[in-house]
Length: 351
Image (cartoon, rainbow, N blue to C red):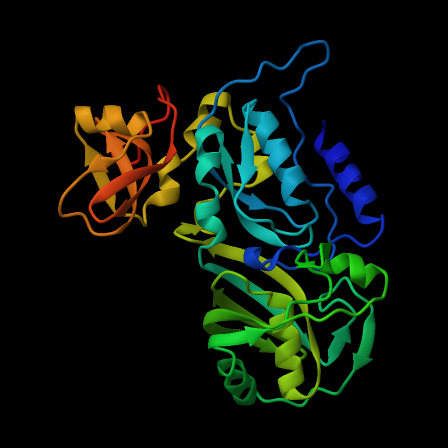
């Protein structure tokens, strides 16, 4: 599949009935459309030659372009690597861009670690304009005059810092009586949407060019940035919607270390493989537990390991210096949670 085919397929799917917004836990929103003719070609598939898949283990930090879904970006990268197995760590909608960590092979077992991680975005809130979806894709349903000082805007932002309650949007992939919110929204049916507790660690006003406020958002899981834009507009009395969104960081990963699809496609196979982080890069926030040979043998058989003096918690486990998996320790007993298959090509982060 070429990049143009991928983009065409994405546009076709987007032109179908209204598609769902991202899960709240991914903290992603839809933003304005931009041309996607610049997306990279998939150069791995050659006419008349079957693509031989291979085992690839590791994490790729991708700078996803605006205009392509997370899954389409994943599939393009997967084909470039000719990888047997791949997944991503939290959806970015087609109209949002930025950091999208991709997991290959054994790393897919630990992708969930980033779903719950804090994330950082730069968002553009357009004041004085309310849309049907809370973002730039919806229809403008109300416009108001914007007469707000930079100082007043800064003060309003600080009201949303901390642990707050946020009501999920109508177009969400959350469930109500067995159906997704967005299904009810498509039918014009209103349903109760209970507010949920979220954490906003910081809101920083980076630029104020009326009516657009560029805001850095550092938040916990479950945050809807477009709802934050709507709530800010409501607090200011002028309305607002999310005009643009870019993810800058997720967990300990930063977009500055990411690579775009164009640049990835231009690399040789060896250079592309060198871009992969080891599997345990997803787990550096966890304490480390090293096992001796006898303990490792039991661990790989799914048996418990008795280790006195260990505090309760989740650990990244190593055997003979190589990453072995994750264990949960309770009352000095380490129980295997997830194991990795023995690797021969991907080095451990701390080996």
